[in-house]
Every structure is written in C-alpha cells, then in structure tokens.
Figure (cartoon, rainbow, N blue to C red):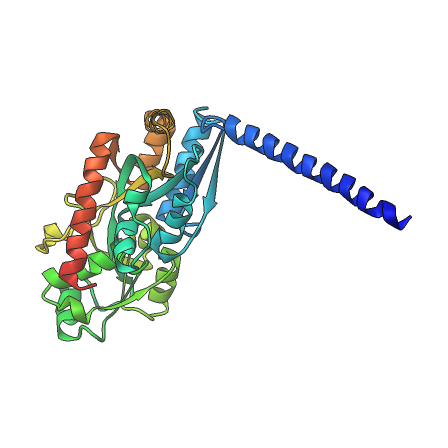
Length: 328
C-alpha cells in the first residue's frame, strides 16, 4: 500500500490546485463585476464620532436614501491624523469602490507626522463642505471672553494647557495661529492632543486643560446645555445658526475653515474616476444632503474635477507655510 501514497497525494494536490484556480477565477470575476453604484465603501480615517466619521455617515445616508448607490457602508480606520487610513487607501490602487474622507486635518498631519504618503498619492474626487472650529472653556472658567483668555495666555503661556485633536491637525494649527496673532510665542504652545472632541471635552470638564479646540459639532450640545462657553469660531464671517463671534470680529485676524472632501485610491481609469465624480455630484444635489448641510451648520463649498485639484494644490501649500511659520 505504501507505494500508492504518492499517487494519492499527487491526485489530492491536483484537486486542491484546481480548486484554488477556480476560486481565484471566481474572485477575479467578482472583483471585475464590482462597481461603486452597487457597493461603495466610505472610509472615515478616524474613530467613530468625529468630523470625518460624521461626513462619511451623512454621505452614506444621502446615497442610500436617494438610491444613488445600492449599498453604501462606512468603515473607520483611526490613527495619526488620518494618515493610517491614507496609507491603506494608497494600497488599494485600482479599487473603484472605495472613497476616503479627508480634509484640512490630514494635510497638517501628513507634514507634522512625516507621513510616507500625501494626498498627491491618491485620486482627488470632490470637496464637499466646510466645517468650523471653536475655542471653548468650561462654564466655571475665569475666561469670560477671548480677550480674557489671550491676556492670561500671554502672561503664562507654558502654564496654559490647550486640548485639541491630532498633532498638525486643524485644532493644533488654529491654536498656533491664535498664539501668533494674540502675542504668544507659538514655540511656547502647551498643546495636548486627544483622539477626538469627546476626549477633549472630558479633559475640559475635569480641568486637565484650560481651553479646548475642536469642531463646532463636537461641542454644540455642551455649549447649548451651558456646560461649555465658546470664545470664538474660526469662520471668516458669521455663520448662520452658530451664535458665536468669529475671531476676526473680536480683532484677532485668524480664520481657518476645516474642509471635508473625498479621495479615491490611485490608479483609477478615467471612466472610473468620472463615475465617482458623478456619484458625488448627484449626492450633493439631493434633499438629504441639503438637510445634512443645514443640520450640521456646514458651508456648501462643493468642488469637483480640475477646480478641486487646483484648490487642493493651493491648500497644501498654505498649510505647509503655516506649519513652517509656527515651527510645528
């Protein structure tokens, strides 16, 4: 019987090899048949509950409700100001069914974290909207106004802890710009980074930090409930529905929009990229998306195609300059 074992083994190996080949062919056919209209994955390169996650889920809802995409799902890939999600997106070259949410935070994180990849390694699809950042303090804080805070900050920069999101992100940049314009050396900035607005709020209410910086929506409920007091918002002009003065209105020449957009993996065909752009263009024209803009107090700054590419080049250069000037 022993001499027959090689034959049995050989037959078994052939069968296994054939099954592997057939499985590979089937998987290839499935991938080839996949389309963004049938199944679209929206990657939020951050933990649930933050600004990118909110943009992804509002997009998911608008795409589903309007029937633009049959199956839209959201996945979260948190870490390093979105650069981990960016790296994964770069690794999905040619994938026509994935969109990554991005924005100002990622531009700064790429520079400050020395990321291997940048937004020039993925495919620009669209800018969706602008969000704004607010500076807040606990209700029992001695800082009643922005001037109160700046005066104390100038006298004790190292002793004034400021909590916000990832290093190099919008919150960090805004804190640096406020220091620069408010007469505080940005090099003395005592900035403590947290994973998201929820952790910043916990640090504020426990008085671990004196001041918090994050997106308006992260703090809006606590501001309305009276637990937090807002000292200023980063918009260039007053925002309808946000009863908080801008920094410019208070004599501090600082404005920093926090734009949200979507990018696709590299290596898409022209047809696949055009399809992605068409899907997002249809989405922003829906009533569901208009409602999302209104509820979240987002500014409609939709851009697609060449216009978005030009904006992206300009904003990357702007953020690099800010980071260099602040020495971050």
